Length: 131
Image 1: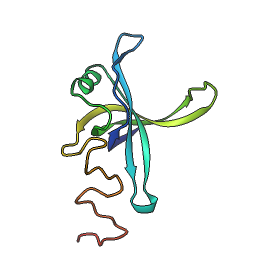
Image 2 (image 1 turned 135 degrees about the vertical axis):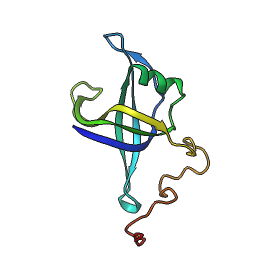
Image 3 (image 1 turned 60 degrees about the vertical axis):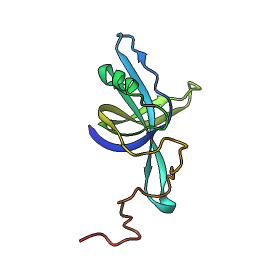
Image 4 (image 1 turned 120 degrees about the vertical axis):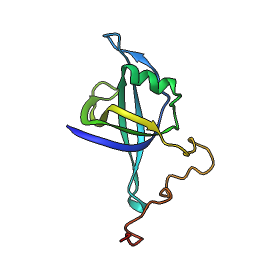
C-alpha cells in the first residue's frame, strides 16, 4: 500500500452522502500541479473520506477552490466511465489526515497563477541548490 502526502486545489463542491451502511462520506477531486515550466501538468486525485472526517470537511467549509494538504493510502483504481462501457483508471486516496493551506487565494481571486512556483521553491533546472 502506498502512502501519499500532497497539496492540491479542490475541483468541485463537496456533497455529503450516505452509504448503503448509513455511513456519511464525501468524494471529491483535487488537482495537483506536477513539474515546472514546459513539463508542468495537472494530476487529479480522487479523495475519499468517511464518518467524522467527511462531516468535518463539509462543516469546515471546504469547497471548490480550497487549497488542502491531504495524506492517506493511495490506490490505482479501475472504473467504468459515465457511458457504462469505457474503462479507465484513476488515483484514489483514502483520506487519513488533511488541513487547509493558509494564505492561498481561492480559485479566481487575484494572485492565483498556477504557472509560478510558490515562494521559497527551488527550481533545480534553473537555480543552484543550497549547500
